[in-house]
Image 1 (cartoon, rainbow, N blue to C red):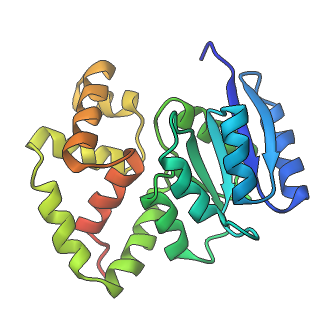
Image 2 (spheres, helix red, strand yellow):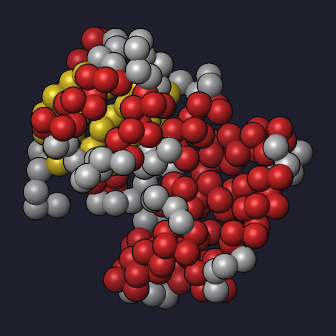
Length: 220
């Protein structure tokens, strides 16, 4: 990527912020433009610093990362948000993803994967862990079986080829990987993804993945 990716780190733990800054500093194409310790400070920092990507903690005093992520979803231009989590609050993670987050990372994710996640988010793609996402969806679907029916009805709007692309997106595959699997050019895949977002009324690829997993929850 020719341009430098501007990143804002949001976490109430200063040690976490320092650690993430050090990790991101190893990427020549990434610049940490600021830090924030809570959601309100994050919103102000986004307005003044215009980051491309926000690394957002969920649990913070005042405005938490969930509310901040939902608020940023309506910003113009909206930065890509990657949620930081320990997965002790599965439903909170899903709320963040449904609220517009581009993906999620465990706080103990290896540095190289954090760099990859930031680059993919900046490119309009997602950092998904399909296994964990399926587990999260399964937990929520068990409490709300109507989600399966609604998700399947929504996916029925798609053509067979669009469904193939949607399922590949749900597996966390990049445009290049999807193109290789389905024998399509990367440009054609991008066009399919754009159509998916419009047809399914999804904000990003993560929300497409959520729909696919909700329509086909893991068997017990």
